[in-house]
Length: 192
Image 1 (cartoon, one colour):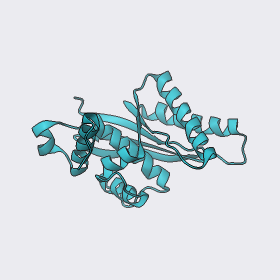
Image 2: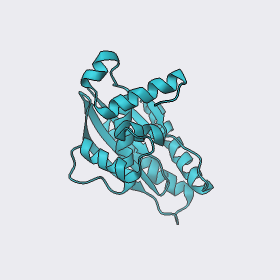
Image 3: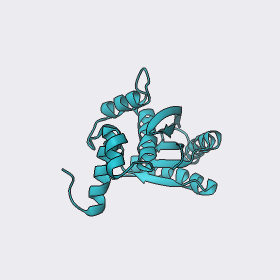
Image 4: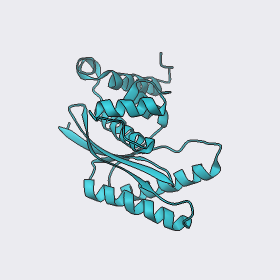
């Protein structure tokens, strides 16, 4: 197992797209970079997609992550919002494939469970845990920034979660909750 891993997390959105990069060493995340890429709703869609694509690709090329994690699109009542998220997700997937960087899709529930130990945590709770985990003075703002960092942390831990006795001795409570949720999902039994 490598001593550290660099993960780039993306909270996809057409108006605001969070991009966060963390290094995970010995199960401890540290902040490398965070930004929120923006596009204006008045711009033509192709220009909005190009603006976000260039920002994501620049972050990938500058920070050279070992892995990329992307929040999985989920159903919403607002079709326009879902379409924008799906379009940005496609851009990120293509950028990862072009650079041959492994990419994972994580649901919001998986990310929340990983960083807070509770899959139904609210945005404030996620932001506060990101602040604590990264030892920051304040939670990253806006929420898209904190969410991108949470996605990166979750993926970094997921790829490095110890099992068995080593898990009990060296994992954080959030990592143990993540490992239990993954084991329950794989076995098909509900988590208690």
